[in-house]
Image (cartoon, rainbow, N blue to C red; front, top):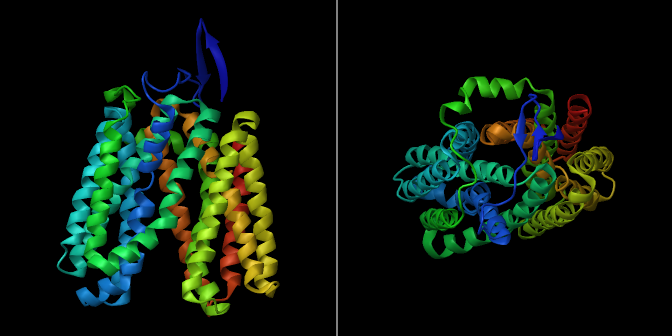
Length: 414
């Protein structure tokens, strides 16, 4: 994509050859700091809805007389709804404006939270969790599109990094908060708290102004727009390279409980520290990216991050496969891998949205859905290959994901 001038109006040349106006900033009267806080809050729905109820899984099974597989299905079905729903909300945001579809998704999340809290059996809970996922994904998809509406590519990447800083609070605090609520109010109280979170996020959404004009029928057909994105090499380069690298994080999430606790004998109460410290690495990297991307640009920062993850993946193959360094031989490279993700995520999303700014909602939907799908596959492969908590399957899948991300970056984007 390149910038051109038509008269006195600066425009961007999109991947499809269409000239569109460069975003001129936030709507008048909008505070930049408050906008970032609200957008970051809107991206918390996924981590909150997953991480907060994880400590309650055994209690749910005991209360609803369900086995472990049935209880774990409530998580899987949420992820299915979260991934599929993204393909709906983005096009609605392009057609009808951003705030309306986002508010509808938040309302569905609140309703589904109440449904989960009142569920009489595991099957009702599973059904409500699907709707929970569909509602939860609306706000993050729309928030990314609202950033693209307001900022150009590099500035948008900087803003998204700041949003991820706000979002990073959720995976750090949600499990702790969930455990406290579980102790005081039971597992149903967790879902009532999630309903309250949805209400607060909805109120925050009301305080920001609309960033896009509804396009109506000019937004194009749903299938034709997705086909246009899927056939564009540059969009797919950003989406797949960041998606594969982020899939390594899914492999890490799926594998580390068994690697740390079963293989290395880490006490369960200490596992949370090893898990949470990596979130700190991700947050630090996002601070760095938010500052440096304005100087070096999206492509260079993202390229550095992808090269770093590929190199760290190769290190993990050696340390994890041969047992070098024990638990620290796995934990330290993972710390830097999660940190390098901070140079990939926001830049990859900003790059993919910049390729088609006239349908940023649809691009946000497809990019997010691809990322989640690849990540789910990576986590499933780790589970299928793992035996006795050996670190090698997790390290091998993580390394493979990073190399696939590097290949996508080099072959498609460039």
